[in-house]
Length: 250
Image (tube, rainbow, N blue to C red; front, top):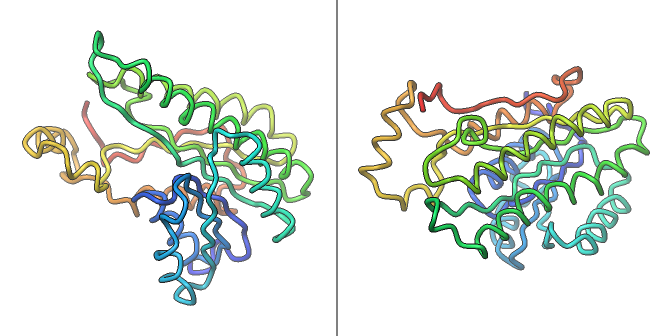
């Protein structure tokens, strides 16, 4: 398993946070050359330096805004020129605001629509152009959410954007299959991230009680599922949405 992604060039967006960081490390542990993206300049430098020479693969920090077509295209083409190919894209970057109906902020809504939908489409479109010129094609993994499939109180806009990610996945998979490009999605349940642990702990425990496995997902749980789609083990799988939620009853 240690070289499951050997020599694969992978781009992971939103890598400055818990799940994206875990993905980057696990991918590099499995031999990948990882380009870890975040929009906040410098936020990953110390971590990337700490990972240097500790893993079979490599982690390179790259900073650009996925919603800016020019920035994203320039960064992706620089990676292509440097590595010669791009094998995996993980559209992990996302924004979440929880607001009840009647209290929804237009600014927050626009931010979620812009990052979660437009940013995902932007990255998918640019990277798929590169992959379509490769005989080996590639794998694109979109990070959706359990609430995209089941909905949740106070998450109307967020669940709508993550539902759109599912639709993007299904349509892109059908369109790009002939080019040997696989498109799949992961729908995480509640995951133990720093933001999650700042939530009201009594209310959080109520939600954990609905998880049959009795615990929150660790970022590594999501990353390991993602690695299946990134690897050649999923070579005949496309258009699928894999829920990683510990068997949650919502």
